[in-house]
Amino acid sequence: TGIHMGSILPLPVLIPLQKAYELEEVLLNPDYYDFRESVIWLKNILTRETCFYARTGFRYSGKANTNARGFKHIQIGGVFTHRDFRGKRIGKNTVAALCSHLFSKEDMNISLFVKQDNAAAVKAYTDLGFRIVNRMRTIYFY
Image (cartoon, rainbow, N blue to C red):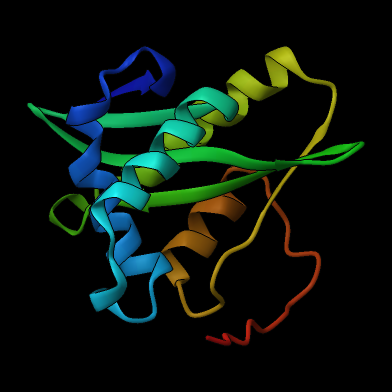
């Protein structure tokens, strides 16, 4: 598995991974998936945020990007490993590469959110040195 910085990658090869991420992690109802909106969102990530992708063979298998910036914090979001590649530390390695890059460029703290029931992600993040600061619950409205 190779880790690549997103801004140097051609957009079309990343669309299937972005779609899988949105369908599994973002949208409450997959009927709301909109290809054009997804491409716009992906373009914004690649131009405005720091984004790393993992490639396994000829497929992009995982991603992690920044999604917010404060005075002393950068937030990581959009962490996703395609279900065909889970259990191979792709998410952990992608987040590690992103964090290493951020630490080399920024003098800021790095934070992220994770679903409490995602034990694999919680373990990966704590293995990388993140610590649980607070537990919260997300309530969705639409």
